[in-house]
Amino acid sequence: MAEIRAEMVANVWKILVAEGDPVADGDTLVILESMKMEIPVLAEDDGVIAELKVAEGDVIQEGDLIAVIE
Image (cartoon, rainbow, N blue to C red; front, side, top):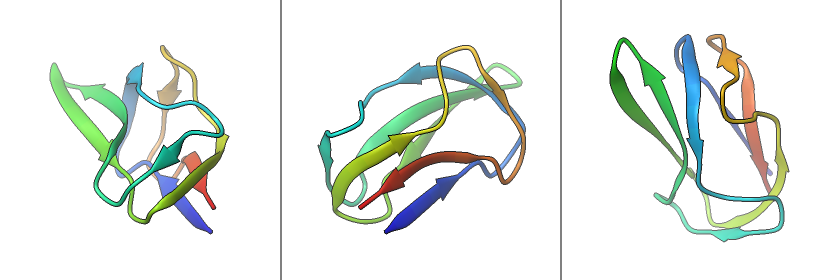
């Protein structure tokens, strides 16, 4: 099981996956926006999205849980 966490304070701009979706290492899961820059959040392992802990428009802090991949 892999936990995907935020590396910075940002807004959740777009979510590209849903719970139950299969993902591969390197797939973009979420796009964050910070200081007018778009930052993709990538899967770090192959698996299935077990949990999504954010919604579009959320403001997240460094270290916040974004998703869990099983």
